[in-house]
Image (cartoon, rainbow, N blue to C red):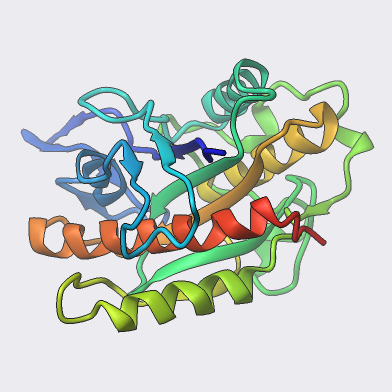
Length: 259
């Protein structure tokens, strides 16, 4: 049995500011020439064959990559993310085993995010801005999550969602494989993280989990943040880490180890 896997990423459309083209902005307002999560798509292979150091299964792991290539990205726009993720789960309702979403963040390692929150979730760890809404920042088009058309079933979903996969086991196994291959396949470290934060990343993660929850999509959902590096050497290491995460997650799907 094979495990198809969708890899997704996001990048803002190019905007001309003071005659300098900057295609990507992180949630802190900093503009970058290259979005690493989009650049990463050109490194990822179409499959992990049997016997690959990062494929512990007895089958070929197929990797579907719809956002590879120039212009094939998810916009940093609340409404676009909601529409795109809904269509994605409709189109791949029963032919995908794992939806793996990727984005860039200011970390020195790859992180596997454990959960996500509905947009009306409130917290006391983000400051006054997020008291009444979790995703309170403007997107790349100057819009807010609260302006996004609501889905009819939104209130029928728990305020916090997680796929229930054994993330600690997946990450520990990925690091074990990375350490075993450290001399031949260089990779970045990977750790678990509580959530994908309060910008479009966390919103996308929740939307994917929510669509699975309501539509009973076959595929499980994961979200990874990667470091903001754009040179080929570092991107190759990040690519290897993502492959190790995929390889570690697939046996858990096969064994049905979902909480």
